[in-house]
Image (cartoon, rainbow, N blue to C red):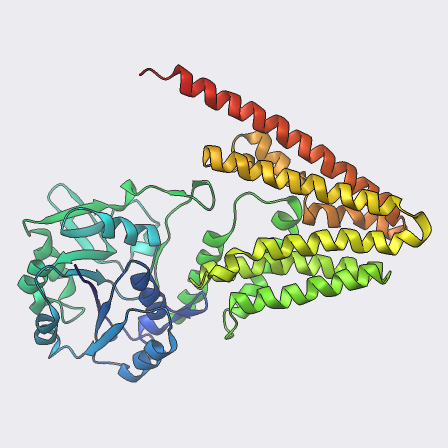
Length: 443
């Protein structure tokens, strides 16, 4: 079974700036580049673009996108039906994509995994704000109506039967109506798609946004930023870092900067902060630690927005953890000349309790499938103030202003110990409840 994709775009879709909708940038890339990456992610090997406009611009986008289907063909509207039939082989699965729409990966995934050979995604009249559906393709199915969810799956037979309607934007609505009448067609209502996201451990609203004008690209970037935001954060990340991160990402989106570049830059900054702490340049080091905390959120968000997560990025937490623990020992080195071994004992205790806390939290997630801080309201609220890099560095600020670094190190050490035992108590509490629920279930 070979997966292929069909995108009709370009003609009759110019904005006042004579730019095709699919070439408008949102979240650091054109919508076309985003669609290529999304198709590659579900295993599409071959993509067909039907357009009479901006062919050279689309060719540049194809060459500039690394994570794309292996083969991409551009056809004009006149020759498209014949070319599509030439590439259509019995058993092929085709994905029909609407131009100029930011589509949630979960919508694409559900269409992909649906057992029916032909599936059309449907958005109800009240599923999204009217301003978003104003330019959507209307669909009417017997008693229920709505809008095309911007992605459909077609069997090779269904494509062959409707290929002459699939060569222009004008013919797309009629093609969808004809496909809906096919015997193997199923309508997938978007409202039935599970909203649960593993990375957030909670339900997150679907993203679906048609981009009509160039300024819509900025709105779409804001929507993607909101979608990429982690739900459970400590108080510095939630109230201080978040707006700064979004400003930085909006700027970086317009530059050829990869998330790995941000991670590498942040690593260099982290080690430099370590050097400053050890050299007794305490206030500049603390300022650098705050910048490090912000950039630690930027690279992850940028990766999610640009759909450019890498294996290197998945190990970023090891690097940031090593840097953080290095800071504590660097502070101990700075204080050691005056206070002897005491700062080293505090730094060692701080690191050991944080390591133990991280181990027990990972153990809990492996057992339950949920992070500890997402279980109940108390856990979510405690997450705001729990011991960790951001909270520790901001807790040092009042001590730093009065040059009481030894007391500050002792304070965050004690807080790390308290955090460990609070999490341990919550872990035992939740595991006991899990066991009770398992035992009480009827067989």
